[in-house]
Length: 226
Image (cartoon, rainbow, N blue to C red; front, side, top):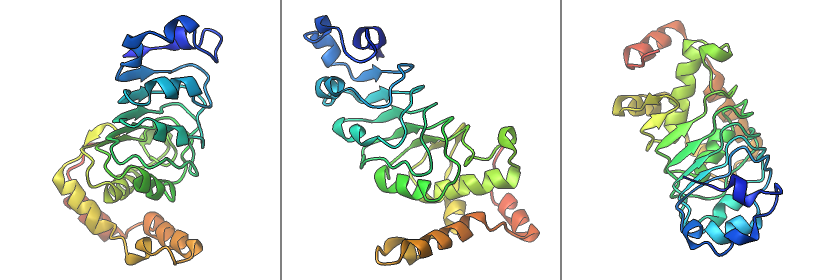
């Protein structure tokens, strides 16, 4: 991992001129800008590294709804955005090749519309982690087992290519169960449907708790270890 903290941000905003001609850094496929108090991506970084960087660590900064710069990195495969200011309204640019996205400990409170928008932008994720967000229930933030299970099933229903969600492996049985529990109707595919109707439809789907008999059936068909 090439860490440019000391080199790029000697004054917190600009690189030392001595690094501009360093071809070894320009060719780096991994770049870390963690802990730099960033709320936007410096233009010279995008200019120098947009063609080579595949793994980008911008954790522990202040990025929020200004993520369009990610589209400038043509070959991104993984992005670490842990401990930033990502919230429900944050949208990502189209990145069909992104495989790993870490969003732990951000400000995501509701799954909808965040997960739906995320799927539109990064549909082929294999690794996703949302731990430490209010939208990802766990015993640590007051959620119970059924809250956690419903959250996990809902996310998997949108991302069928996931092999790892949060701290647990995803298997084929879980993906099939998620598809059965959260069947998305055609309403999700028609842009002409008013957004208010879409919102109501999805909120009902996510937050309607199953009856006790349904809970037992869900448990019997899954093999989660909590």
